[in-house]
Image 1 (cartoon, rainbow, N blue to C red):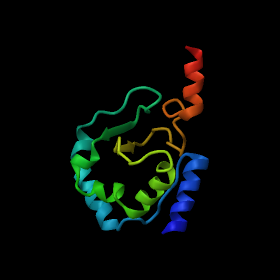
Image 2: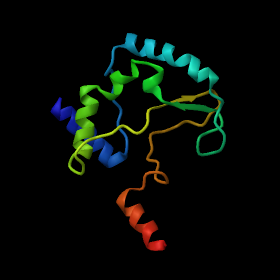
Image 3: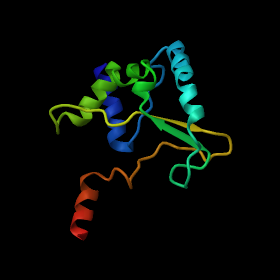
Image 4: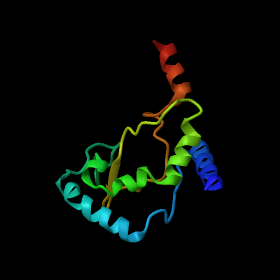
Length: 131
């Protein structure tokens, strides 16, 4: 899996995102979708332009379905994350698991970096120098 993890890490570094296709069995994905259906329907639509008015976002996926752990603990995911982070830290801690539903009429959520939220060292220096 090393070359695939290297490719994923390179895509993350270059583009800020990567797509992993067919990583889990479709039956697992269907069961996960069923597990998340109830919390999804209880979640109101988002407000504001950043989140999109016709989207739903809800977190804590690991507590909502035991199947969510198959994503975050998948060997390819872990190997890719290690490539990206372990040169700068001793261990990795998961901060957020989130599902996003994009409803009919919503603007598409194309792959993108959240520059305003995750600016990295250059953004930190820029803001620190402005103080």
